[in-house]
Amino acid sequence: MAYRSKKAVSNENSPIDPWTLQSKFRVQVEELLKKSDTPFVILRPSLVYGPGDLASITPKMSCAAVYQMRRKKMRLLWSDKLKCNCVHDSR
Picture 1 (cartoon, helix red, strand yellow):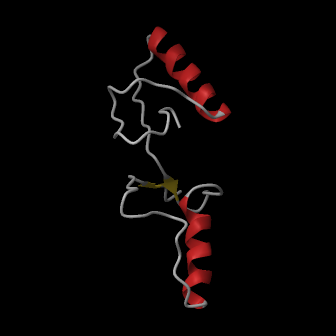
Picture 2: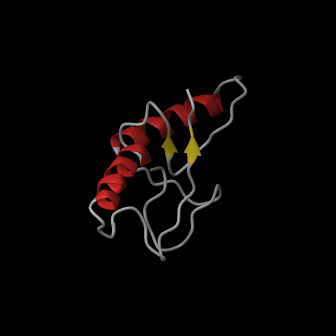
């Protein structure tokens, strides 16, 4: 969460405003890398999912399966106004 949640779309030119402890540490590491001679690429996906995912979309998919089994409409993950990209981690 390097970008503060807002109504406008964020991109690589948007100002960084980390608001979770984890994102603050990630931004610190990015700044250290920028000062080093190490080649690097910064990825900031909004979601990463896969077998090791404990906090992103995989638990929500399990929750969605329960909603489906109970024939209830799920309203937790997204709406027509909320859109996000995700990356699959297949490790």
